[in-house]
Amino acid sequence: MREVSESEVRRLVQEAVERALGPPSDAPPPAARPVAPAPGPAPAPAARPATAAAPRRVAIGSDHGGFALKEVLKRAIGEEMGWEVQDCGTHSDEAVDYPDFAAAVAREVVSGRCALGIVVDAAGIGSAIAANKVPGARCGVCHDDATVLNSREHNDANILSLGARTVHRGAATRMVKLFLTTPFAGGRHARRVQKIMALEQRDG
Image (cartoon, rainbow, N blue to C red; front, side, top):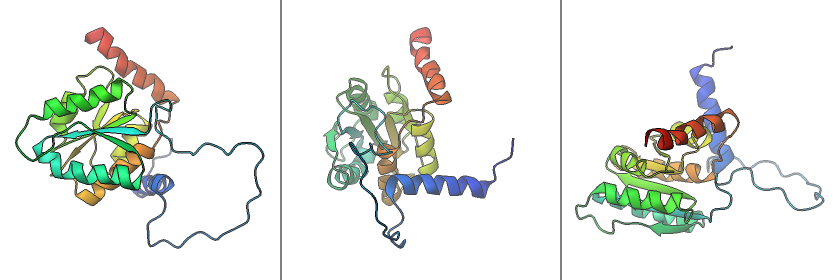
C-alpha cells in the first residue's frame, strides 16, 4: 500500500472542506458554462445530514464556559444555514454544571427530535463524556476540520463537542457548518459503528 504524505492529507482535507462549504471567499468564481436540463427530478445534494428522516433541527447546549460561543454558533446555524436551533441552555454565564446540558442535547438527538447536536464547554472534553453516557449518542471532541470530517465520515458522530478555550470563534463556526453538511461514508465504517453501538447492550 502506498504511503500517503502529510501534504496529500492536507490537500484531501481542503478539498473535502471546499466541497461542503464552497471555495474561500477570495477564490475566483468558476467559469460559467451552459448546462442541459436533466430529465426528471433534480438529484439530491451530495452533503446531507446522516439521519435523512430527521428534521433540519440542531440541539445546542453549553455550560457557562461555552455560553458566549454557543450564542455565536446559534446565529450561524439559524441565520446563515437556515436550520432550526433547539437551545438546551445554559442561558447566561452564571456557573452551572456541564453534564446537565450535554445530556439534554444528547436526549434531543437520540430521540429524533433533532438531527444533530452541538455541545460547548471550556475544553469540550467533559461535555463529550457526559453526552456519550446517553445510549445512542456518538459525541466527538473536534479541534479542526480534519477531525470534524473524520467524526462524521468514519464515526457517524451525531454530536459535536467544542472547547471554547481551545477553538477560536471563526474556526468553531466553520467546523459546525462542516459537521452539519458532511454525510456518513457508510461502507466498512458502518460495520465499525455498529460494533461501537453494540457495546452499549453488551457492556452497559
